[in-house]
Length: 159
Image 1: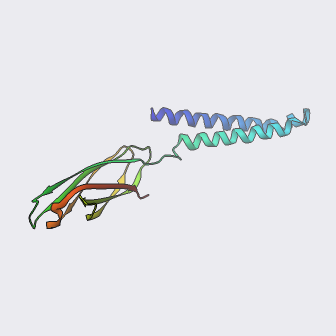
Image 2: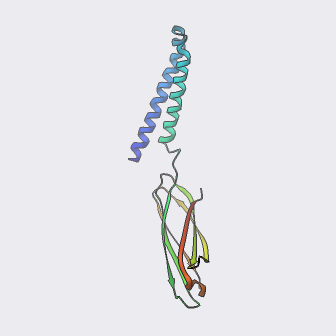
Image 3: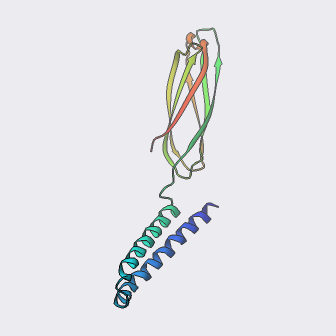
């Protein structure tokens, strides 16, 4: 489907530019016969050139953007002890049609009273279109992590 999309828009752009070139060659003979046709031909020429350029840009991916989706889960280990730790594991998927040079994953742990227990940022390099990358973070050991209840994960594209 993707290559058909590229082919269709590229062919559309090429045909539009071909017709624009044919119109450009016909401007002088048309103006000699019908002087009022000159501006209309110029407008048609500019429209075809714009449509052709747009076809090439869309067809060859000038507007491709990464779109990252994620899921994550956290597990609390050794709750109630001095060695309480929280392990966060997750997956980032690029479901967009363009690559992400880097992704930043901001992980925040909170207790039941909306107090922040800890936060960390994980960086992933080169998340290509259709790629899936895993990440993890470890918090602790700290007795305060025994109060862990909620996990917040924010993923942003860094280029």
